[in-house]
Length: 195
Picture 1 (cartoon, one colour):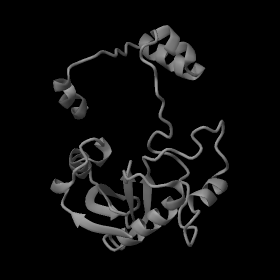
Picture 2 (cartoon, rainbow, N blue to C red):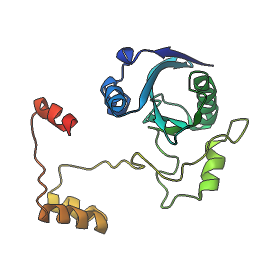
Picture 3 (cartoon, rainbow, N blue to C red):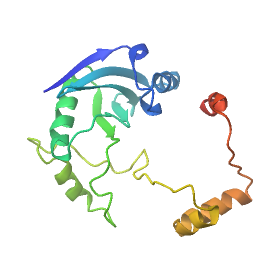
Picture 4 (cartoon, rainbow, N blue to C red):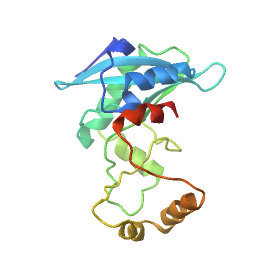
């Protein structure tokens, strides 16, 4: 059973997830999006989530959850969980909300596959275990779809050789155009946030 309760943005506690942080909520609010925050509890585990309401037309809104919820959910239970969360969240969303978009932090079930299956097959799998087919694959991705673990003990040349040729090309192009990457102390992080 899923329990959802609204909380204030000041009470949002996700310090390890920038896209689910108070900072992000206030930043997006300053740029015209309305932040809503909730505490969710599912099977004894709790998390806070930031939902961003975005205007998608003069009269319609979208609810967007970037990189959330951050609960470990077994793949076979994800459809039921997301359906329950969406239904409960709907009570708190403006009536002009057209859809809820999740960019989930969970590893894709296709992470080890060479190619992704067709969208309709992905939708069948993502709806497995739910009573309907309410979950849909978005036509485009907002957040990165893949995470790579890179062994930083290797030399820069070794790292480059293991990258895709287009990645190598773009790295070298950025170097030719004067992009510099350097290590700085953490007290300079506010400068990055200001960007």
